[in-house]
Image (cartoon, rainbow, N blue to C red; front, side, top):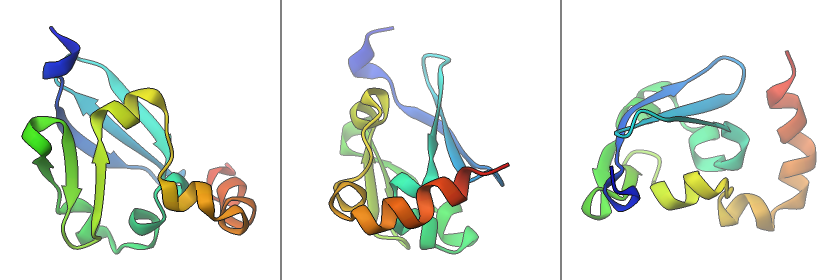
Length: 99
C-alpha cells in the first residue's frame, strides 16, 4: 500500500494515558495523550467523536477542536501546543504515563 493512501481506521484511548491509531495498512501507532493537550482535557464522549479529514490524511475531533495528521503521527510529532508549553510537558507528561 502506498504510504500516501494510509488512513486512520480506528482510534483507542487507554487508561495508561496513551492513544492508539490503527492505520489502513495494518500498523498501529501509540502515542502519549499528553502530546495533544486538547484531547487530554476533552471528555471521553468528545474523544470518541472523530472523523477523517484532509482527503483521508487527517483526523478531526470537532468537540475538542483538534486536528492531527497521519504524517505527523507517523513522524512521532507532538502538537505545537505541547511543544510550546514546557510547563505542561514537565507537569503532566511523566504523570500521565506512570503505571
